[in-house]
Each structure stands twice: as C-alpha cells, then as structure tokens.
Image (cartoon, rainbow, N blue to C red; front, side, top):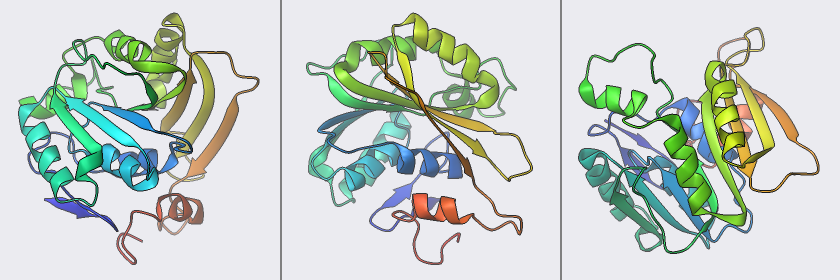
Length: 235
C-alpha cells in the first residue's frame, strides 16, 4: 500500500496509521516560512517530515517514532525521496527524546484516541492510543522548541479542550487555530492548533470545509493541498 504525491511516494503497509486526508491537510497547512530546523514527533511513515522537506527548502527535519517497523519504512520513504540528506529519523519514545539543538517548528499528529474504542490490531492500537500520557507529548515539545518557535498538532474537536488545558499547563500559548468541517452542514471534526512560548497579540482563527455539496473536494481544500496531490488523483 502507498500514496503517490507529486514529488515523493509514501509506502505505509508497515505502519499502523495510514496516509489520510487529515494528515495531508495538516502537513499542507502548517506555516513553514523561515523554518530551519523542524521536528516530527511520532513520524509514522514519515509523511509529515517529507511534506515539510518539500515545502521548506532550507529546513533540516528530524523525526522519531517508537515503532521499529514504522521507522524502518519511513527511512525507506526518505531514501527514495528528493531530500534524504535533510531528514533524519530515529526509533525513540517521546518520553526519552532529546535534541542538542532546539527546533523552530514542531509538528505532531498524536495518538489522540486514548481511552477510545480498542483496535483489533495491537500496532494500530499503539499508534492510536499511545503508550504514554498526553502530557508527555507536551513536555517533549516544551523542552525541544526554541523560544520563538511554534508547535502544531491536529486533534479531533472532542479532545481539543483536554489537550489545550495540558498545553497551557506546560506554558504554551495558543496562537493559531483551524477548525475543519467534512461538509458545510456538519460540525467541525478536527482542529489544527499552533502553540508558542510567549503570548500572541491576537489568536488567528480560521475554518476549512473539505468537501463540497456534491461530495468532491472543495476549492479551498484543493488550493491548500495542491502541492501534494497528483493532477487528477483523488480530485
């Protein structure tokens, strides 16, 4: 199994969580202007790391994941991409991750289904439910982010309030928020939030609808993710 983007190909058959509309949206949305060093926490197949490498031409990206099979496949995805010299991946638990230099961008698509429905496969359950408390992801971000950096995550809206309280407890300030609706008639199902270590002058709040009334991708979604979808593929 895999997914062909415009500039790289992702194999994900060894990864618990597959390439999805949510992850493509997230990797397309995160601001990358001026980014020199970025971290992908829980990288999985390496999709977000590769998206950052494509969008931020001068950036060096690190990524880690606790799952050995996922890291092995992510490394292969990186090796066959145009940017193997700019991406470094390691097998590591979020609680143990340390970097000698801080990052100016951190991204995380976390295992946010903790205490939700159990998965049939152990690996998928690990990726979805995680081995560590949500606060571990926040603590990792707090110790890894530079003073002027930003930390972005994507979460289902029903868990955003809980994670937001944890972020604020770790000293983060909300600076940016994108609420995502599947269709205009449905309530937001996802929220992308950007956090920083100093209080912003104002919080930027945005909204995005993925599908038009006829079921096709909306023009806004096409514009956002157009750097990655092949012409005609899934559009």
